[in-house]
Image (cartoon, rainbow, N blue to C red; front, side):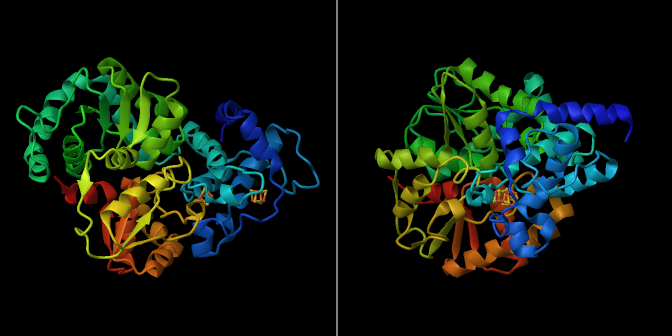
Length: 417
Ligand code: SF4
Ligand code: SF4
């Protein structure tokens, strides 16, 4: 690594050193309480996947270049040089961590591994050694924000083609557009993912609830957040903020995408609209009697996987359970306290890395498979695209024989007048 690159990377490191980050870097006592917390370590048994082993690399760099107020009696690691080999170690630590923050719940000091891995990820971006596919997808999202006019027509045609599928699920009122787009004066902006599965069921439920809504031109997923790149995260986020502000909506509802919801909820700052997840909105409709569900629609026992970024990291825990109580007579919890639930193993951008890391994703989530099997349920519902993909892959790989479903799709299927 040349001196200039090294300097640039250390400047990036420094840019992350706020009070919370210094606390995380200086406080770990290596007590080992988090040892069993990580699903990767629990599934594979390799030390490098223990949470504090992951952040030890970052901490040793910090000790070398930024010193801090580390207590020598608790800090055992040696200062570490920033070299090409260190960058490889940072990659291995950061891109085998899903950012689920289960380890944080176990740590007596609440040390946030996801935050510490965000230093590793930013250094990888600075070194141009981040995963190319994530970088490309982030840039594409930003480009789309800059040249909306170019893709508008194609988008509107694609949406028009989905309308009949919406009407099949829920008949529209006279004069109503099944999928409204770009509606000034709408109360709610719905931000979906690319694909009918994220738009059609949601539209049917909004229409059934007589919501005054409009669909966003942009997809919810934030690849900048997966990359740990604050600038690109913000640019991707800003597209939606600008659209919501222009349309003067009161609410921005994020589809079933954990990271998109958490980023929008926690990083969009003070705005004239509230941010909700679609699961919260569906629970609200049920509470207000705006939709009704057929509780006999699904005969098989159902369990629910809480997406880490929606449940543990954003507190949406009661809402899916409220919905499930209206959806089935046989709901089976995976765990008593959801905060300790196992991650599915697909977050943090790992699913988007595709086939290259499929083997790792399957092996590192064995504990999740065992947890799901133990419920005896036949339907595995969830409310996040990444989790759904990962759980479907696990279902195939381990021949679990489950029916993996999006919670929102089940709601749309069970709608009754
Ligand atoms: S539980 Fe917290 S303090 Fe203990 S080793 Fe893990 S990160 Fe460090
Ligand atoms: S955040 Fe999740 S994946 Fe990362 S070290 Fe902690 S438990 Fe493991």
